Image (tube, rainbow, N blue to C red; front, side):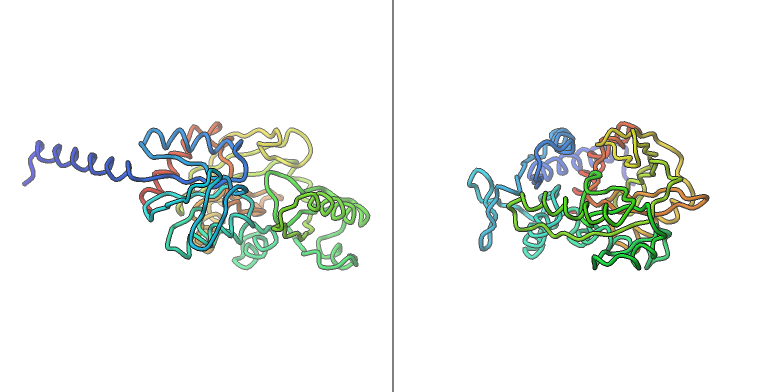
Length: 316
C-alpha cells in the first residue's frame, strides 16, 4: 500500500523527470512569414515550459544532401523528440515535410495532411465519405458551358485550388469574369520567382443564404476543441484576417456528426473545418490543416497554443 507521503514523492520525481525531458526539447517552427500571430503564441507557451524555440524561415534555408542549413548558416540538428511545426505554403512545406519524414522525424501537421491544402481534393474527399458539400467542378477547359451548368449557373464562386486566408476566392457572374480571374491570378503568380506555384481552379455553387457566415470547428488529435460562428464584415468572406467577427456557439449536432466523420476518415491531427448553412443542412467547405487560431482563442478563451504543444510533447 502506497502512503500519501510516498505518492507525493513519486509525483515530485515524475515532475522533475518531465522537466528534464522537456529541457532537452527544441521547437522548430518552419514558416514563410515571421509576422504570423501563431509564432508569438507558440513562443509564449514554449517559454512557459522551458522549451527552446527557433523560427526557421523556409525561404532562407538550404536543403542539401542530408541536412538543412538555416538562414544564419547553421546546420539544423533536429532530434526525434524535438517538435517541428510547419506554417507555410503547401509546396515549400511539402518538401521540408517529406525531407524530415524520410529521416524518421515527426512533422506537424503530419505529412499526409498536405493533400487537404487543395480545395478541390478536399471537396472530393467530402463527397466520397457522404458529407454534404457545395456543388463543385474542376476547371479543366476554357469551354465552360457544361461546367457552369453542373453547379447551377451564375453567380458562383471561383477559387484557386490552393490558397489561404480568403485570397483568390471571388464571386463571378459571367464567363468573362471567370476568365479575368484566371488571367489576374496567373499575372500575380508570374511575379513570384519561386518555382513552386502550382495553379489550378475550381467553381463552386454560391449559397446566397449563407450571407457571409460560416462555422469554424477547431480540432486537435481527433477531438473537437470548440466551434465559432464567423461573420463577414462585408461581402461573403468571413475570415477573421479580413475583418470578420467571431463568437463561440454551442456545437450543432449535424456539424458534430460530420466533423467526427471527417476526422476519422481523414486521419487529421489538427485542423479548422469550415461549414456553411443551406436551409436546415450544413455543408462542409474546407479543411485547413494549418488553421489560424487567434480569433478562436479570443472568442472561446481556450489556450490553443498550449494544447497543441502539450499534445506534441505527448506524441513525441
